[in-house]
Structure formats: C-alpha cells, structure tokens
Image (cartoon, rainbow, N blue to C red; front, side, top):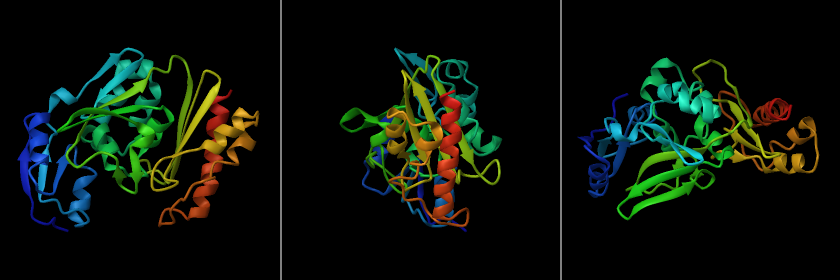
Length: 273
C-alpha cells in the first residue's frame, strides 16, 4: 500500500530534531525506518511530518562510561554485534544484535529505533530489562535518564515523550557474568515467537521475556523461586506467571506459555551451570 501524504525534514542535529518535533504537527522520528515505514504503508501510522535523524553520526558510537558501556541510539545493529568493546564487556548485547532480522535489516536498523518503537516482539527491550540498563532521552527541558524497566508502558508504547529523542543506551559491564538469550522463531529473520534473556551475576539471576505481553516481562516468579533454592526446572514452571501472551498466526497464548517455560528452563541451565 501507499502511505498517506506526509512532509519530510532532515535534521542536522539533535537540537534541530527537537525543534521540528515541537513544531505542533504530528511528527515521527525516522532512523533506519524498518519499524515505522511498514506501519505507514499499511496506514496504521499517519504522521504529518517525518523527521529524519538517520545521518546524525554523533549518535552512533560505543564507548566506555565508568562501569557501563554507552551506546549511541543511532548505532546500527551490525555495528553493535561486531563492536570489540561490547563483545568483551557485554557480549549479551552484541549477541542479541546479531539475532535481529537479516543482514539487510542489521545494516540499516538502529538500537535506538528498536527500543523507541516499543514492539513487544523485538529482541532488545527484554534484554535491556534483564540487564537493568538505562536509557538517556533529550527533550526541550534537557536530558533525563529512564530505567529500561520503566520505559515500556504498553503495546507499541513507551514513556518517551512525543518531543523527546532517545540519544543513548547504557548497559553494565558483565565482568564474566553468565548470560544467554534464547529465541524461538520459525525463520531466522522472523520476530521472536517467544524469547528469554537471563543474566546471572553476584549469585543472583535476572530473567526477562519477549512477546509474553504488551511489554517485555520481568519473570519475577522465576527469580523468586531461584532465590528460594529451586532448581532450573522447578523455577521455570513459574515463567508464565503474570504474563498475557497474544494469540496470533504464529502461536496461541497457551503455546507461548509452554515455550516460555521450556526456554526459561534451558536458559537457567546455561547461566547456572
């Protein structure tokens, strides 16, 4: 289908983008475009103005920031998965980027676009929740930091304001912590039917689920069971607690619950070995 009519502006800086977002029109940011443009072609999204920030090279970087790694929001998935610093300091993030789509998608899609889109089937949101990552957004009132667990508010919804730009993602250095991201999908380039991110550090495990609700889900029941001494198999039985998985052409809600328990058990067996 053909998108509804829209205006197009290319931002020359973040400040320029903020000015365009505050112009009073229904404006959307365009980075890689792999999430927004399909919605526009289906006319599920009808922005009056597209603000292209894809050429803002100062938002494409990976660098150390104390005990964390800072990733610019416009860093392409290909660059995330191949970055030497991330491969050493936080291989979970590098690995996850390599699980997204196909090579064409990874060469154009950005980590910030994936997060800001708020798709519950996307890979990065659950991983960032499991990592207790931080997101940095800039708006008319300046910068603010958002905990990843507080960013995703609903189906394709985040707590980013319409006049804010996501500029940076900060993830912890894992320092030898055990980690895994297990993803069930029909084809290599498909969205996750269900996926599980697990991180074990300092004697405790954090687990988050992809596509088990309108937002990424922290598997608190699993974490509580592990803290009480349960083995991976018994802890994984609580993986679907508090979730509301969808039923669609990929899987029923019941099957997704089954997948969550199976993948969580496998993930825990890996990080607790």
